[in-house]
Length: 137
Image (cartoon, rainbow, N blue to C red; front, side, top):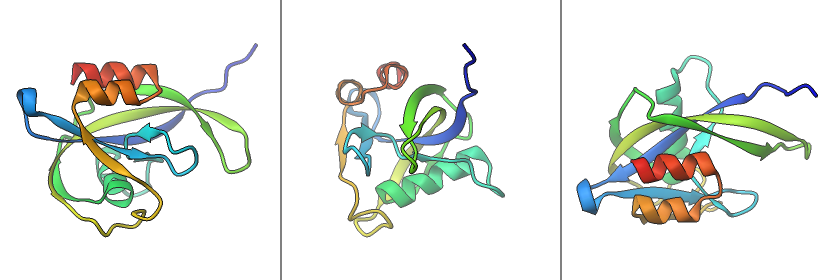
């Protein structure tokens, strides 16, 4: 059986605080309402880290932050496409320390966001690889 190659995505692990006070920002997906990181497709003319930061603005309202251009890992998951087909995706994750969060952002009416500890976030997401990244963060 042939395995299709993964489709690349970029994700922002938005966080604030440090040590025991560190929290990460999760948003709900538009389709299923499950908890996810802000993420999307790579963008022409932008490197992957900058594309992840733009997704953090569009999906979570992160207006300003300190972006780490070195990814901390990646995770895989199935994504339902607009045509109903499932695509195997692999998201590269970039940390983004949040400095300014806005309540009015492009997808504000389509998503819910919440701040939780990395361990709580790991319990809320479905993807095993993402759970490990969150626990190790």
